[in-house]
Length: 397
Image 1 (cartoon, rainbow, N blue to C red):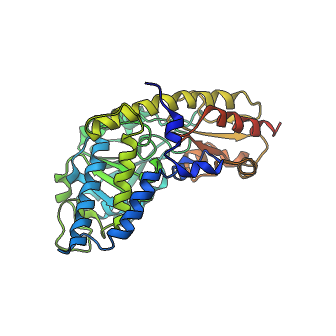
Image 2 (tube, rainbow, N blue to C red):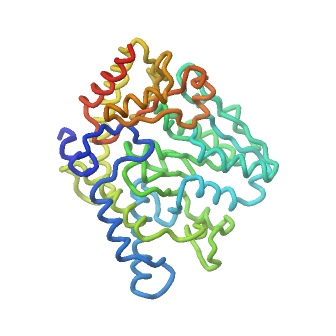
Image 3 (cartoon, rainbow, N blue to C red):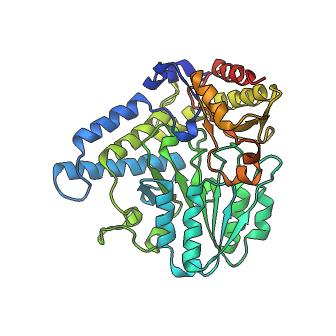
């Protein structure tokens, strides 16, 4: 059955404002079901899950339900799902919890990653005196060549942190090849899948990752994060981060419990992902596959149309025009600062991002030409909205 974008758009009340939202990296628009669930959480779950009162037990149930929902996204075990306020907070907790032997070797980071999967590792390495090695991008198209990991990863490597896809250029990384290099030396592979999770049904086993990071706001959920372990038993070998000395399992790495509305919103957002296709049926994992596969095919066609349309404009240069990408694109406009481009787009009812912090774009020298504009497509995007974007960009001559 064809993807029904009109039906999907009806699930997002904010689309009634008439604006075109091409800023998915800053946060997908919120589905009505998520807003309703969070409102219910505010009213019914004012306490944290620790306790024996009816409300505390309801909060504990909401926490377990949220862990199971996240696990379904990755075909993982709920016991391996750690929840927290942000990716950076969770990565920092992981870095803090690692045994001292993990800092006796090297950490490998990539220039393509968001800062959330870079800075906590740099701080940990600086604190412990560990060496950091860098995977570099191909400056011609912004991709991250996986072959370089055969040189970067060795017997001294303890942690490899890498993204599954760039949040600014959309380029997809061959994580499976990196995983093979990492597994061969027994290092921990931490993959940030935040940019891919809204569009692609994933399996943590197929990725070959030890830890996967997710950001629910990227698919219309609350502004928080999840860190999923392929092997939940690994958590027991890490130092406790929680302020509660009696915690066990994934709660060991959660400094404090999340508020009820975040948990109910998280679960509702994953249910939303699972139910965008009318034909989706069965258990949540099955529904996620059906719904997300349909959305992926639609958005891939739309992304190709976006790149092709931008490439027709003489002053617009798409970064990595021919790379395999998720629905995210960055481009520069000759002679026009990115902020000015975004302001004109905003004046015409189109939301886009400019000068997103990116070591990859910095390495490519994008700042020297006025910065880059970044656009990201949500599941509610339509072809005529791309035509509107191109029309406004064409006004620069």
